[in-house]
Image (cartoon, one colour):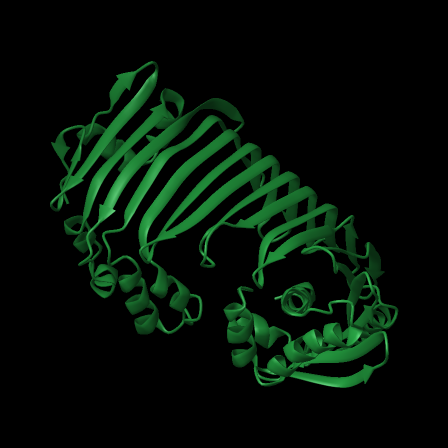
Length: 444
């Protein structure tokens, strides 16, 4: 969890509280009323895992410092307010203090957030003499408010707007670290004590660490809209011009013209989620071997997810195996349905050769009696609890490449594909524990 996430979390709480008082108070121009709105939210935070200190209240301005002292309480509190936060994320911010300045006027409230100290785990990581020099540089950046968020709340509407100050900083030690952030702006709308719309965009985000890591994202823009009464009634979309990641240990990734659109809706306690994605180009480079894809399309939805369990899973530690599995089992206990209308790639590049791509569509129904624990012990158990069809279409070139593996070649000899328009087709049917590939039963 980043400092930005904590700052935004506190920001959301204050914005919602302010709008609540503006909508429930006759004299909204009374600055005391606005200060009271902020005070109520800060009081709630102090009983839910936060410490609020160094509070200075004047006629038209206010200053206070916020920090987490109980990560579990803080995470549950923020999540309950619609700001999804895990306990581990909250733990990462232990020891960090966040400064806040509030300015009240007749027309708007201005809020500013900035870190005053680094989290404990970051300080503990700097042990050598050279590390101490890096730590001193980071603390100087914090002292000079290099990391700074500003937001304006307009009294006469339910709109807020803000930005994060551009960052262009370099820290030098045994390794050189550069961080660049340009043009990050956000805005939103509040109704009935909830943020119902939120937009964020930035021009460039760049992180560089000597020869080990080099990450850049450009042309980012996202939108969120609440469409119903629960946190799982929403639409979101993302647009990214370019992503470039180069890491010495893990290889490189380049992707451009990325768009994602997702929806979620709740009916009678069951959630349906959809996802549509398109990526113009993806290039992966591992140990000098390039794997490329052109025009990746995805269109899928999943339905009949239990809402109450979905919310509980957000608060369950994945490391608690039995508890997590039990929640997962309940999540899909209403005959979950998965529909992949399309997963396709037009062109694939491998071993220096460009070839035609592939496509997949699938429809699967999962029986409510699926035993997650037993599935882990005996995967074949799933075949008796899942019914559906999977249609796979491969280009001749891809299948020829796959057949270089002896196991794939053996599979090919046993289950011959159909042919259509130069593609190799596999129709897979799963029913009552039996799997048929192009009409022939799969042997285990």
